[in-house]
Amino acid sequence: MDTPLLFGQPTETQTLASRAFESIKSDIIDGQLSQGSKIVESDLALKYGISRGPLREAIHRLEQIKLVVRIPRAGSRVVRLDSKMIEDIYIARESLEGMAARLAARLMPDEEIRSLFKLLDQHEQAISEAEGRVYFQSEGDIDFHYRIAVASQNQWILENLNGELYHLLRMCRYQSGQAPARPHIALEQHIQIVGAIEQRDEELAELLMRRHISGAWKIVKTILEDNHE
Image 1 (tube, helix red, strand yellow):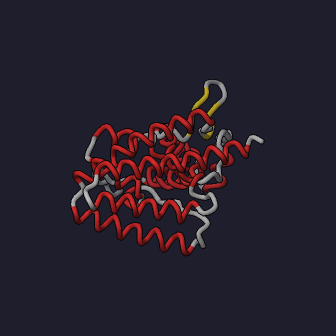
Image 2 (tube, helix red, strand yellow):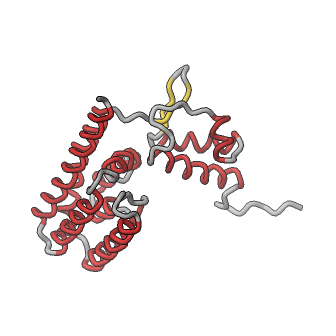
Image 3 (cartoon, one colour):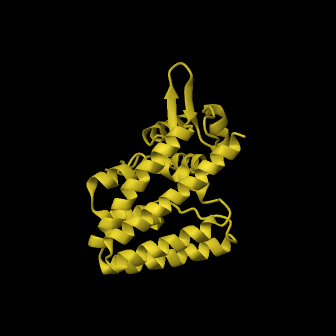
């Protein structure tokens, strides 16, 4: 007799779909799947070693987090971040993340601040191992910006920065994180931001975060302009 499925236990299809979702998501964010490229199920099924059913579930989840868009009568494609969309994202980021840093300076527990410094020590080691070529953080609790947003304890900031647009933000950040000299500069700026939070200097924390985001946008803008020359 078949063993009954325990409540909440994932089926094999769900597990395969989750694995495909994570793999495709990562490949979109780091550019291995090109922006605007057509989603061809047969090609992706072969690439990721998965059948059509779990693959379609993965694609549906990617649509929910805005990394894949469905176009009527044209099928699904990887999202394309045009210049205007990226500029809008960075303008919003500068405001929201600046306020998140201000609130973190007010609300973040001392223990969490110490943990954030330790996280940046790990980031410094990762940059060193990459010989300073890249500074790109995995998602969630090992993402500096994610941690600052959580520390804000503000629902609206969390929903905008860590919600469905989070991975679009990560696509933008991946571009700036590869610019020459940017990894070390970004890390130093992160350390300064946490220093301001530790000192409970709300105004300085916000100012430093705004400058950090503004600097990243300038890099991405230059990259975009170079790509269109």
